[in-house]
Each structure stands twice: as structure tokens, then as C-alpha cells.
Length: 324
Image (tube, rainbow, N blue to C red; front, side, top):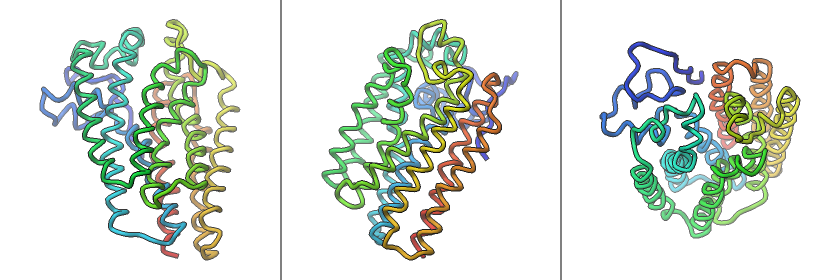
């Protein structure tokens, strides 16, 4: 089950962010001095790490399925992607909070974040961002040259994303470009080169991001309108369900196409099981649409967080198909 949203509690820890997961380890177990920095990294809200990591793992699974090979180095790629996803999501969120600190102070859901609430300064946040990025770089440099180059290139969409909502109604596209880069990187880390199935998987991930982040953005539509911040949620308005259905369909079609490309020479059983991944993923996304209420922030946050399970479903089928 996905994490449940935090609710007001008289025992709430000082400095807790408003949309943090209730009972999270940062607010209750981490040393007090580290909490503002871990909150900058969204360690108290782990769904973002999952959404950054899952395209990596799905791509690695499909790459292994494509050539039928799995080595100990692939285990390191999986572990390295997990650590890197946590650190780079943290660095990216820290950068986002630095650039958005004035906007965050004007939005009810975000004014409790560490910078606008005064828990850390922008300069302290910048130092923390660099530390996370350097550790991530150390992991990246254990991969092959092409994967390293892709990892360096990923800094561009990460740097641009926080500004996208200021010049386009489609900032979710820029988030998708950044959050799904691991689909390109993990494939290349396994195979040594970038191939079309990884590119198709990347495109599928962008469509998926448009789906879940439009749901997420509906939490802030009123505040965003007041301060002039753009989003697909504001753009689509009451037509969001129809747009989300379109993103759902595009996501599943592209995922299915990527699976067909890598399983075309595998056994019929392997292909069938792998194709069950995107089909079942589509069922889960359809379930989200049936639950959607764009006026209820608790429902929106719950559905957004449920996308961890949305991504784990095809990953399970891809891993199973490898052994068939």
C-alpha cells in the first residue's frame, strides 16, 4: 500500500513539513541537527525517490531480458541506481527549493519547507546540494563511459525543471525528462550503448509522469493561480480526467512497444509474462482515475503516492519473464 498522508497531530515534531508522511523516520528518529537537510532531500516523503528509481530498475530488467544476461555488475547497477536515486532526488529537490523559495513561502502546502520556514538558509542548502551531487558522481563513475556521459547530461533537465513552471503550461514534461533519465542510463550501464527500447521506455516514463504529476499539481491550483505559476493541472482544469486517460493510454502503449522490442526473440511465455507488466500497470492507473477527486487534497496526495505501486507492478513481471 502507498504511504498515507500526514494529518494534523498535537504531537507533530517541530519543523515537520505539511505533506510529510505521518510517522516518518526523519521527524522521529534522525538527529535534530540533520532534520532540516533531510527534509530538503524529501527523505520524509520517499515517493519521489521511488519514482526516480523505478525507471532505472525497469530499464535494467528489460536490458537483461533483451540479451538474456545477468552478472554481479548488474546487481551493483541496481544498488548504485537506488543510492543515486535517493541522492540525486535529494540534490534536485534542494535545488528546486532554493530556486522556488519565494514561491514556496506563498503556497499553503509548501511554506513549511525548510528554507521558507527558516530552518536553513539558501547558502546552507546549496552546500548540502553539492555534497549530495558529489557522492552521486562517485557512484556514477563506477559505470561505463557512455553511462557516465549520460549521467552528466542529466544535469541539464534537472537544472531547468524548477524554472519550467514560469515559462510553460507544461512543466510536467520537464519533470518527466529529468525523472525518467535513469531509463537511458541504466540500460546503457548494462549494455554499454543506448538502444531504441530504452528510448521508447524513456518516452513511456514521460507520459507516466504527466499522468501522476498532473494529479499531484491539482493540490496547488488555487495558490498557483494567485502567484502566476503554470501547470498542466491549471491548463486542463475540469478536463483533467480526459487528459489523464490519454496519458494513461500513451504510457501503456509505449511500455508495451518497448517490451515487444526486447522480447521478440525470447520464448512466447517470456513475452506473455513481460506484456502483463504494462497491462497490469494500466489497470492500476485506471483505478486511480476512478478514485480521482481534484477538489480533495488528501485523495490527490494518496493517488500520487500510489504510483510507487504502479511502477513496481511491471517491474515484477519483467523480472519474472527473465527466468522463462
